[in-house]
Length: 415
Image 1 (cartoon, one colour):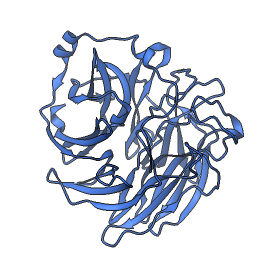
Image 2 (cartoon, rainbow, N blue to C red):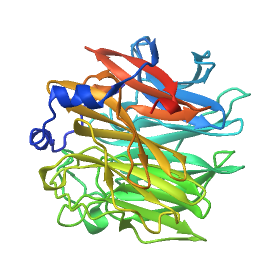
Image 3 (cartoon, one colour):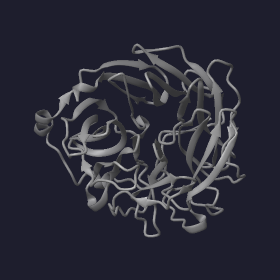
């Protein structure tokens, strides 16, 4: 098992130091969370998924079984974590703070994935392994998603239920990267040697179809995100131009065709390495909301933008209003006019997980401080979902070489 708690890429610590927020401002404007907490010991990399009135969480256990990693899933029912199901285990996984396993649920079926190391001498070469499992039957095997044989990076997966009998999946695919590549993530490959964004459909039998390249060159290590609108699926991710402009773009499936990727907003963030900070999108019918981090012009921001036409156009960005943002965003669309966004931000020497309600009219609810968190990369990307008018959060708590996962929930009307 290869546990990687860092990705070598350009940091933006210097950018974060350019902005500050006083303790008095925080005390006067922030609502302290009255949330309840529970902790799962000795695990990491939570992924929450709400499906109707049900809430599921997957995680990776790398501690209680020190010889291998285990991917587990459980339902959270009546605010209690139900007995987990082990989906897969191996000592050959690539376990990383930013490129974490995800799940999608379609009726009784779960689509899940993990990353498998390709060769011992390729430190940053791994394949995507996926499995479609009937939760009422024994777990089936996992198969390789990427069909190439290259010792390159494949990951940053997003997945969702597409129809009653299929899933949609999208990912970053490094098969076209140059041989002898630079694994520092500061590389600048373009054209046919770039990091691809690919997508496909997977049926309930695990068969792959309609694979397509959505973009020939994207940022190499920011998460993708996807949503299903009434008009079809959309995929958003951090792009990368030949001049290293790394703004968020969208591509949409209209009928049987995918649109050319285009920026949702021209931030103009020029950065020579991947910031490891992807966007998050949510949809209902043709209403969309997206949150993302940018460090353009030396000003770290978390922005939220809305679309009422399935992503054809977007409103001007609205920035959240608390702390010096680190990013690591999540977002849930509450209704056609309001979204709830979460992010990590620093105030002074401390780092917090915040959440705030944002309206299409620019109105903001008061920011809520969910909890104090570590700024360490091992904290990963906090997760947020809404079920039955309650907001659930989950994130990793680093503890030296080990970690726990913390889960909390509170009412939507407290924002």
